[in-house]
Image 1 (cartoon, rainbow, N blue to C red):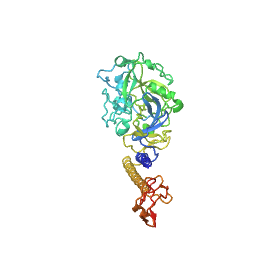
Image 2: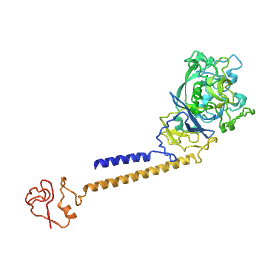
Image 3: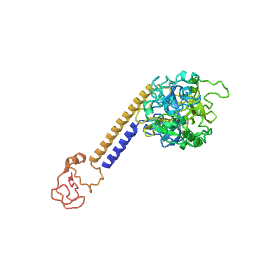
Image 4: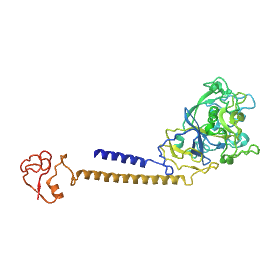
Amino acid sequence: MKKIISTMLAVMVLSIIVTLAPANPQTGISAFAAPTLKIGDYMLMGKYYDMPILWRCVDIDENGPLLLSDRIISLKPFDAKGTHVYNDGTLQAESLTKNNRSKLGSNLWDTSNIRAWLNSNAVEGGVVWPDGCRPDAVNVFEGKNGYSNEEGFLSERNFTEGEVSIIKSVVQKQLLNELDQAKLKTSGSEPLRNAENVAAVFQNYEQAYAHNLEDRMFLLDIKQLNKLYQNAGILGTDYFKSKPTQLAVDKSEYKTQNPNYPINKNSFWYYWLRSPGAYASSGSTVRTVSFDGKIHDFYFASYSSIGVRPAFYLDTINSTVISGTGTDETDPYVVGNSGVEPSVPPTLASTNSPIVAAPASPGTQDSNNRTMWTIIGISAFVLILIALGILIFILFTKGKRKPGTGSSPLNSSAVWNDASQSQNQQPRATKTSISTCANCGESMIPDSKFCTKCGFNNTKLD
């Protein structure tokens, strides 16, 4: 009986844990389930221009799953023109040609405007520009797509605290231009050679001038881009190229007038890498991926017509799946921090539609969801306790009840008292001297009712 009760208790406790574990009402996925990302999986997290951002796992390396925005999310200059300094305050090396940093921006990732913006959580106008060269309209090419007064990409308008906490901060190799290698390099002996073909861009990467930098959000470098190409069998042949979102097109002040090179959500467009042009002849050129898939190193950092395609590494240990299967862009994983109350999962309208949020108000829906699941959890807990009480009562009373007719007391050491027997048996028992036990035949002590051998009650009945 004790084993039965113990087993039932264990089952009840397990039921309570499962019942009270937060789960998404649409998918039933427990909020404690960590995402198991595979190359090619889709994920929805954060937003930009107030619309959710669709990401895709494009590689898995020593830092974990590498997530890349599925599309170009904005058109922005890499850096602004001005007097550039290193992080220690000394002047940056300058080209001796007309393609210099003071006029066209710097290709040094360390102090670039785009890096500062991607990793900032500041409010509007609060982003700190490391070398003091603000990306104002007056400091960028043609005065278009300046972003000095915009909030940081990781601001609370775009990402929740829980979402930011599962974006890993990682140390990565960062290539250097010839101008900066004397001051900054920690590895390498030569500049990275130019190559337009994505299959060849990795050529002398291991020998190229570089140092290490730590980032949460970043742009792809040459090596990571080459990984997209290697994973083309999963991602698609053209996935290393990119198309802009409709909002990126709509919000851009740059509008191409050339019908042969349209900028729209259905056409491939240029986007920045974080790898600089290699040679000292220009400290301003940054490598880009062209609409035709070629890798160029001749676009200047202050150009306002190039797209931004952010990337980051996901902390899968502290992540939780809120909804989705991740298998395609119409049903992406929606993730959050496992220790933070998840927000309402955004949704995608269709493969070719802009990313749209769920119609309900996030704050109201969050509150309603929490209330509903709290009520369900408490109700389930109470019902389980009631069931447990009934079970224990049944088992307890069964253990105290006298065996019915046909029950054999031969192996029982229990002795039934007169009062109990008189209430449950008719006619009344009378005390009579019995010489032998009616049950086992053993000799009885005179005037004794109970057999000393088997314990049988030999009281004669009227």
